[in-house]
Length: 468
Ligand code: FAD
Image: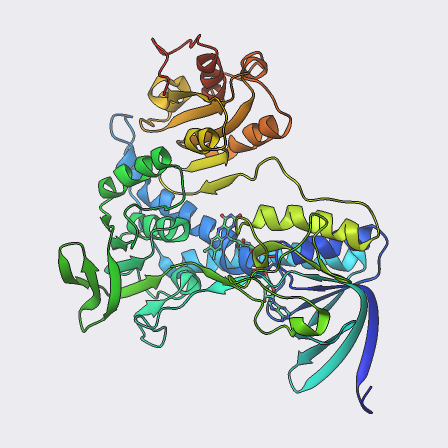
């Protein structure tokens, strides 16, 4: 140690305080380990501070603002107005309530929280930069949970005052943008674009792929793609943003170059793992070509080093990070644990919501299964009718024996249904067992029941099976 260096030690060091890191720290502490959590920015990470939580608050505010357009035929008239600074204050209030809650949980569990940027200096030691000071922490095990950051585009630099990333799109607009161009039609672009359209912006979404929501089940993506123009959103697929001009964004469409008027531009073209500045070579960890850290099922990347969340393979989602945190904390505490889920659900908080888990019919067929599927249209759901929802469906995919392999759902509040189907896949439930499970009436969950009956060839509220 260099004279003057301050060094402390911790049985478990966690780097990164997002839904991966804070959950790992809490669990390891509750398993009796002495834990230090280092976070360079804000406890709660991307998800609580600038991701899942504020985006869902904005989406909820946008839905309220949009309600007056949805009451036709109900006998109710509404008027809405949007006070954007107050909406943004509300976002910050919800975020600080949740991050404050996490901080008190960490304190109660006895986790030492250090504000600083961690970098490995030796195999069992990290240097923590805290302003003009550096502190060293020695560890028996380290759990890496440093998350990801938005990818930037040279053609659309954040230095231009019109251009923001997803964080800017949540917090930085002083007024509702007159013309908003969202570059990137993945789930974050779709969620933000839809929210701003409902808050009154004229929105154009630009996507380089042939369809929006690339990688998502096509039938689900189509439900959202049909709805976007109804909300006044222009969608340009097969289109690349190539730069800015005085009026807005220059794009190359399949029909040639075009200029899109834009008062504001959101760049939302994916995220990059935060693995490039950690000194990983000092702890014997190498990243793959995507910058991700390879791990074994116990989440071990190297002797003394575990990794979880967005810096590892798999969907970059908060619940995946938290589930991995449970495993990493147990491994760090010397217990036997494996991350081996049958399926990881994913939700897009679009209009309508879409949710998916397990295999699509195409994926199951490609994996060699003899596939059955049934699509129950929500137009036949009494609950959907009571709330005026017309589009959407519940699709179940099963193997020849009827074991549920996957589910793809579109409709209002379907984010709340996908948990049941994740459990079904995890427990290898059959369509018969799902159909024998009484679901409450009238609820959206009956769509699952109906689709299960359909898989058995005996649908109740649709006339004929729709088998693919
Ligand atoms: P993060 O949450 O990114 O946390 C990593 C933390 O590590 C950060 O706080 C960072 O400051 C810190 N850090 C990095 N390097 C260092 C270092 N060297 N030293 C100290 N600290 C460091 N996911 C969902 O599941 N559902 C959603 O609805 C959803 N919506 C989203 C909406 C938006 C707009 C965005 C951007 C993301 C959304 N996500 C959503 C994704 C989700 O936020 C991430 O998958 C999740 O936060 C990953 O958790 P993590 O713990 O791996 O990393």
